[in-house]
Length: 155
Image (cartoon, rainbow, N blue to C red; front, side, top):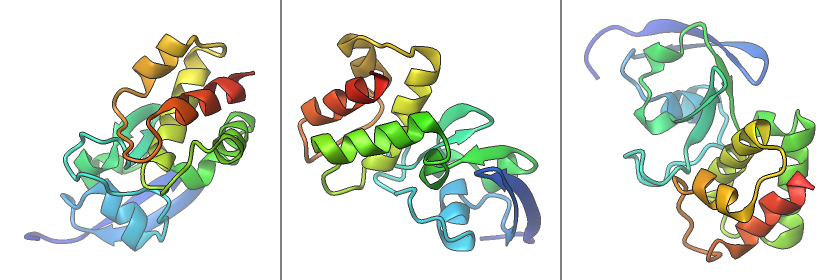
């Protein structure tokens, strides 16, 4: 990558973090490689599958599309930080209990997308869950177990 590395300071899962990275490095790589937060997964690398989803300033984004420099001084929540919230814990437990987590590639993005939905809509319908998770692709479960997990966590 051309150019000089920058000192990137941000808050990740409520903690001040710093990394020395190229400004156009992907946020996904900064999280996984530089900060060791490997829960965020790379699926497609094109923003189409949702596996790399994180919350950036409270907004769900595909971290494979976000240049690292855009995260400077901002708040990021990854799957590792999801367990810090009651909603995140409930989702993780429901995914395990109901089989919504299979191979694990899509699971972090699914859980963060579901947490985002439940933040806005605490008691969603099945159609609302389907719509909220439409940007997340899974190759293992056929989605039923994932939808069931989200609806269970909402209860």
